[in-house]
Image (cartoon, rainbow, N blue to C red):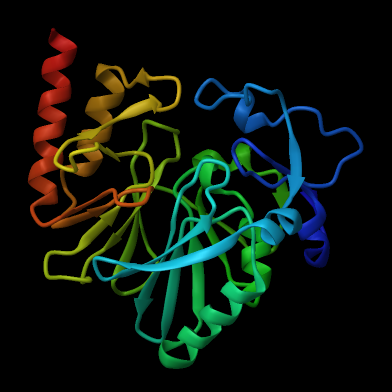
Amino acid sequence: MIQVNAPKLSQVPVCVTCGTQYPEVERMEDCPVCCDARQYVGWDGQRWTTSAEVAAQHEVHFEDCAGVMTLQLAPRFGIGQRAFLIPQAGGMVMWECLSAVTDAAVERIAGMARDGGRVQAIAISHPHFYSAMLEWSAALGGVPIYLHEADEEWVAFDSPFLRFWSGDRFKLTDAIDLVHLPGHFEGSSGLLWKTGPRPGGSLFPGDAIQIGMDRRIASFMWSYPNAIPLGRKSLARLRAHVDPLAFSDLYGSFEGKQMIGEAKALVEASFARYEAALEG
Protein backbone atom coordinates (compact mmCIF):
# COMPACT_ATOMS: atom_id res chain seq x y z
CA MET A 1 0.00 0.00 0.00
CA ILE A 2 1.08 3.57 -0.70
CA GLN A 3 0.68 6.43 1.75
CA VAL A 4 -0.64 9.67 0.26
CA ASN A 5 -0.86 13.11 1.82
CA ALA A 6 -4.54 13.93 2.47
CA PRO A 7 -4.59 17.36 0.72
CA LYS A 8 -3.47 15.68 -2.51
CA LEU A 9 -6.24 13.07 -2.52
CA SER A 10 -8.53 15.13 -4.74
CA GLN A 11 -5.90 14.94 -7.52
CA VAL A 12 -5.08 11.22 -7.52
CA PRO A 13 -6.54 8.91 -10.19
CA VAL A 14 -10.20 7.85 -10.02
CA CYS A 15 -11.52 5.13 -12.33
CA VAL A 16 -14.40 6.48 -14.42
CA THR A 17 -16.16 3.10 -14.60
CA CYS A 18 -16.18 2.04 -10.94
CA GLY A 19 -15.32 5.31 -9.18
CA THR A 20 -12.44 3.88 -7.13
CA GLN A 21 -9.65 6.25 -6.07
CA TYR A 22 -6.01 5.10 -6.30
CA PRO A 23 -2.66 6.50 -5.16
CA GLU A 24 -0.67 8.63 -7.56
CA VAL A 25 1.75 6.30 -9.33
CA GLU A 26 4.01 6.73 -12.35
CA ARG A 27 2.07 4.29 -14.49
CA MET A 28 -1.60 3.76 -13.69
CA GLU A 29 -2.80 1.65 -16.58
CA ASP A 30 -5.56 -0.65 -15.37
CA CYS A 31 -8.05 -0.48 -12.51
CA PRO A 32 -7.70 -3.66 -10.40
CA VAL A 33 -11.38 -3.50 -9.39
CA CYS A 34 -12.58 -3.33 -13.00
CA CYS A 35 -10.16 -6.01 -14.23
CA ASP A 36 -11.70 -8.44 -11.75
CA ALA A 37 -14.50 -10.62 -13.18
CA ARG A 38 -17.01 -9.15 -10.71
CA GLN A 39 -16.72 -5.77 -12.45
CA TYR A 40 -15.77 -4.72 -15.99
CA VAL A 41 -13.60 -2.29 -17.93
CA GLY A 42 -15.73 0.34 -19.67
CA TRP A 43 -16.62 -0.39 -23.29
CA ASP A 44 -14.54 2.57 -24.43
CA GLY A 45 -11.52 1.32 -22.46
CA GLN A 46 -9.87 2.32 -19.22
CA ARG A 47 -10.45 6.00 -18.44
CA TRP A 48 -9.26 8.06 -15.49
CA THR A 49 -10.37 11.27 -13.83
CA THR A 50 -9.87 12.81 -10.36
CA SER A 51 -12.31 13.38 -7.56
CA ALA A 52 -11.74 17.14 -7.98
CA GLU A 53 -12.97 16.87 -11.57
CA VAL A 54 -15.93 14.74 -10.49
CA ALA A 55 -16.83 17.23 -7.75
CA ALA A 56 -16.72 20.07 -10.28
CA GLN A 57 -19.25 18.27 -12.50
CA HIS A 58 -21.50 16.61 -9.93
CA GLU A 59 -23.28 17.48 -6.73
CA VAL A 60 -23.97 15.32 -3.71
CA HIS A 61 -27.73 14.92 -3.54
CA PHE A 62 -29.20 14.45 -0.05
CA GLU A 63 -32.52 12.69 0.39
CA ASP A 64 -34.41 11.31 3.37
CA CYS A 65 -35.28 7.75 2.43
CA ALA A 66 -37.73 6.04 4.79
CA GLY A 67 -36.17 7.71 7.81
CA VAL A 68 -32.49 7.52 6.77
CA MET A 69 -30.48 10.31 5.11
CA THR A 70 -28.92 9.15 1.84
CA LEU A 71 -26.16 10.73 -0.26
CA GLN A 72 -25.71 10.16 -3.99
CA LEU A 73 -23.74 11.80 -6.77
CA ALA A 74 -25.91 13.57 -9.34
CA PRO A 75 -25.70 13.03 -12.21
CA ARG A 76 -24.84 9.38 -11.62
CA PHE A 77 -21.14 8.51 -11.59
CA GLY A 78 -19.30 5.18 -11.51
CA ILE A 79 -21.37 2.37 -10.03
CA GLY A 80 -23.94 4.84 -8.74
CA GLN A 81 -24.22 3.61 -5.16
CA ARG A 82 -25.66 5.69 -2.37
CA ALA A 83 -24.15 6.35 1.04
CA PHE A 84 -26.08 6.70 4.31
CA LEU A 85 -25.80 8.93 7.37
CA ILE A 86 -27.11 7.00 10.36
CA PRO A 87 -27.76 8.99 13.57
CA GLN A 88 -26.38 7.64 16.81
CA ALA A 89 -26.05 8.90 20.36
CA GLY A 90 -23.59 11.77 20.13
CA GLY A 91 -23.02 11.63 16.39
CA MET A 92 -23.49 9.81 13.08
CA VAL A 93 -22.06 6.86 11.18
CA MET A 94 -21.49 7.08 7.42
CA TRP A 95 -22.26 3.76 5.74
CA GLU A 96 -20.71 3.32 2.27
CA CYS A 97 -18.89 6.05 0.37
CA LEU A 98 -18.95 8.18 -2.78
CA SER A 99 -16.27 8.95 -5.36
CA ALA A 100 -16.00 12.69 -4.69
CA VAL A 101 -16.22 15.14 -1.81
CA THR A 102 -17.87 18.52 -2.38
CA ASP A 103 -17.62 21.60 -0.18
CA ALA A 104 -21.41 21.89 -0.17
CA ALA A 105 -21.80 18.32 1.10
CA VAL A 106 -19.25 18.80 3.87
CA GLU A 107 -20.97 22.04 4.89
CA ARG A 108 -24.37 20.35 5.00
CA ILE A 109 -23.04 17.46 7.08
CA ALA A 110 -21.44 19.98 9.43
CA GLY A 111 -24.86 21.58 9.83
CA MET A 112 -26.36 18.21 10.68
CA ALA A 113 -23.53 17.65 13.15
CA ARG A 114 -24.40 20.84 15.01
CA ASP A 115 -27.81 19.35 15.69
CA GLY A 116 -26.75 15.80 16.57
CA GLY A 117 -22.97 15.41 16.71
CA ARG A 118 -20.34 14.92 14.03
CA VAL A 119 -19.66 11.84 11.93
CA GLN A 120 -17.85 9.43 14.23
CA ALA A 121 -16.96 6.67 11.79
CA ILE A 122 -17.17 5.48 8.20
CA ALA A 123 -17.89 1.82 7.48
CA ILE A 124 -17.96 0.23 4.01
CA SER A 125 -19.39 -3.05 2.80
CA HIS A 126 -16.92 -4.18 0.12
CA PRO A 127 -14.20 -2.97 -2.31
CA HIS A 128 -16.61 -1.75 -5.03
CA PHE A 129 -17.68 1.04 -2.66
CA TYR A 130 -14.29 2.05 -1.22
CA SER A 131 -14.33 4.92 -3.77
CA ALA A 132 -12.90 8.12 -2.15
CA MET A 133 -13.05 6.83 1.42
CA LEU A 134 -9.82 8.45 2.63
CA GLU A 135 -10.77 11.80 1.15
CA TRP A 136 -14.13 11.63 2.95
CA SER A 137 -12.37 10.68 6.18
CA ALA A 138 -10.03 13.67 5.88
CA ALA A 139 -12.90 16.05 4.99
CA LEU A 140 -14.86 14.93 8.05
CA GLY A 141 -11.96 15.49 10.43
CA GLY A 142 -9.96 12.27 10.16
CA VAL A 143 -12.65 9.80 11.21
CA PRO A 144 -11.80 6.08 11.30
CA ILE A 145 -12.80 3.84 8.37
CA TYR A 146 -13.93 0.30 9.22
CA LEU A 147 -13.39 -2.50 6.67
CA HIS A 148 -13.43 -6.28 7.04
CA GLU A 149 -9.91 -7.68 7.14
CA ALA A 150 -10.73 -10.38 4.55
CA ASP A 151 -10.76 -7.64 1.88
CA GLU A 152 -7.56 -5.88 2.99
CA GLU A 153 -5.79 -6.91 -0.24
CA TRP A 154 -8.09 -4.56 -2.17
CA VAL A 155 -6.99 -1.47 -0.21
CA ALA A 156 -4.51 0.55 -2.28
CA PHE A 157 -3.72 3.26 0.31
CA ASP A 158 -1.97 3.16 3.66
CA SER A 159 -3.54 5.40 6.28
CA PRO A 160 -3.70 5.70 10.08
CA PHE A 161 -7.48 6.11 9.70
CA LEU A 162 -8.04 2.54 8.44
CA ARG A 163 -9.43 0.01 10.92
CA PHE A 164 -9.70 -3.64 9.90
CA TRP A 165 -12.17 -5.73 11.86
CA SER A 166 -12.44 -9.51 11.87
CA GLY A 167 -14.86 -12.30 12.66
CA ASP A 168 -18.60 -12.41 12.08
CA ARG A 169 -19.72 -9.41 14.12
CA PHE A 170 -18.19 -6.16 15.34
CA LYS A 171 -19.82 -3.70 17.72
CA LEU A 172 -19.38 -0.24 16.20
CA THR A 173 -21.73 1.63 18.57
CA ASP A 174 -24.29 0.60 21.16
CA ALA A 175 -26.93 0.43 18.41
CA ILE A 176 -24.85 -0.60 15.38
CA ASP A 177 -23.07 -3.86 14.63
CA LEU A 178 -21.03 -4.60 11.50
CA VAL A 179 -21.85 -8.12 10.31
CA HIS A 180 -19.91 -10.43 7.99
CA LEU A 181 -21.95 -11.40 4.90
CA PRO A 182 -19.48 -13.35 2.70
CA GLY A 183 -20.27 -14.26 -0.89
CA HIS A 184 -19.99 -11.31 -3.26
CA PHE A 185 -16.56 -10.73 -1.70
CA GLU A 186 -14.90 -12.78 1.02
CA GLY A 187 -15.11 -9.78 3.34
CA SER A 188 -18.51 -8.49 2.24
CA SER A 189 -20.24 -6.92 5.21
CA GLY A 190 -23.47 -5.31 6.31
CA LEU A 191 -24.48 -2.75 8.88
CA LEU A 192 -27.15 -3.77 11.37
CA TRP A 193 -28.91 -0.81 13.00
CA LYS A 194 -30.61 -2.64 15.82
CA THR A 195 -32.82 0.20 17.03
CA GLY A 196 -33.87 2.18 14.02
CA PRO A 197 -35.29 3.98 12.35
CA ARG A 198 -38.35 1.87 13.23
CA PRO A 199 -38.97 -0.93 15.73
CA GLY A 200 -37.41 -4.16 14.52
CA GLY A 201 -34.21 -2.59 13.21
CA SER A 202 -32.64 -2.29 9.77
CA LEU A 203 -30.01 -4.14 7.77
CA PHE A 204 -27.82 -2.34 5.22
CA PRO A 205 -26.27 -5.29 3.33
CA GLY A 206 -24.20 -3.60 0.62
CA ASP A 207 -24.15 -5.93 -2.39
CA ALA A 208 -24.34 -9.11 -0.32
CA ILE A 209 -28.11 -8.89 -0.79
CA GLN A 210 -29.42 -7.07 -3.87
CA ILE A 211 -33.04 -5.92 -3.93
CA GLY A 212 -34.97 -6.62 -7.13
CA MET A 213 -37.10 -4.19 -9.11
CA ASP A 214 -40.38 -5.15 -7.42
CA ARG A 215 -38.72 -4.68 -4.03
CA ARG A 216 -40.18 -7.91 -2.67
CA ILE A 217 -37.50 -10.17 -4.14
CA ALA A 218 -33.79 -10.19 -3.36
CA SER A 219 -30.91 -11.96 -5.06
CA PHE A 220 -27.39 -12.97 -4.19
CA MET A 221 -24.68 -12.76 -6.86
CA TRP A 222 -20.93 -13.14 -7.16
CA SER A 223 -21.04 -10.60 -10.01
CA TYR A 224 -24.06 -8.40 -10.68
CA PRO A 225 -22.97 -6.65 -13.92
CA ASN A 226 -21.71 -9.93 -15.41
CA ALA A 227 -24.63 -12.03 -14.06
CA ILE A 228 -22.49 -14.63 -12.29
CA PRO A 229 -24.57 -16.17 -9.48
CA LEU A 230 -23.44 -17.58 -6.17
CA GLY A 231 -23.12 -21.34 -6.08
CA ARG A 232 -24.79 -23.64 -3.55
CA LYS A 233 -21.98 -23.59 -0.99
CA SER A 234 -21.55 -19.82 -1.08
CA LEU A 235 -25.31 -19.30 -0.86
CA ALA A 236 -25.59 -21.63 2.13
CA ARG A 237 -22.72 -19.85 3.85
CA LEU A 238 -24.29 -16.43 3.27
CA ARG A 239 -27.67 -17.64 4.51
CA ALA A 240 -26.06 -18.99 7.67
CA HIS A 241 -24.73 -15.48 8.37
CA VAL A 242 -28.05 -13.77 7.64
CA ASP A 243 -30.34 -16.17 9.53
CA PRO A 244 -29.36 -15.01 13.07
CA LEU A 245 -29.89 -11.32 12.24
CA ALA A 246 -33.08 -9.56 13.33
CA PHE A 247 -34.37 -6.78 11.06
CA SER A 248 -37.65 -5.45 9.70
CA ASP A 249 -36.25 -3.12 7.03
CA LEU A 250 -33.58 -3.63 4.37
CA TYR A 251 -31.79 -0.71 2.67
CA GLY A 252 -30.08 -1.62 -0.60
CA SER A 253 -27.15 0.02 -2.31
CA PHE A 254 -29.09 1.93 -4.95
CA GLU A 255 -31.76 4.61 -5.12
CA GLY A 256 -35.26 3.35 -4.38
CA LYS A 257 -34.08 -0.14 -3.45
CA GLN A 258 -35.39 -0.77 0.06
CA MET A 259 -37.78 -3.19 1.73
CA ILE A 260 -39.70 -1.43 4.48
CA GLY A 261 -41.45 -3.83 6.83
CA GLU A 262 -41.27 -7.65 6.79
CA ALA A 263 -37.86 -7.52 5.10
CA LYS A 264 -36.50 -10.53 6.99
CA ALA A 265 -39.36 -12.73 5.75
CA LEU A 266 -38.89 -11.44 2.19
CA VAL A 267 -35.17 -12.23 2.31
CA GLU A 268 -35.85 -15.71 3.69
CA ALA A 269 -38.32 -16.33 0.87
CA SER A 270 -35.73 -15.06 -1.62
CA PHE A 271 -33.14 -17.55 -0.32
CA ALA A 272 -35.69 -20.36 -0.74
CA ARG A 273 -36.57 -19.16 -4.26
CA TYR A 274 -32.90 -19.05 -5.24
CA GLU A 275 -32.28 -22.54 -3.84
CA ALA A 276 -35.26 -23.86 -5.81
CA ALA A 277 -33.89 -22.24 -8.98
CA LEU A 278 -30.54 -23.97 -8.45
CA GLU A 279 -32.42 -27.29 -8.33
CA GLY A 280 -34.14 -26.49 -11.63
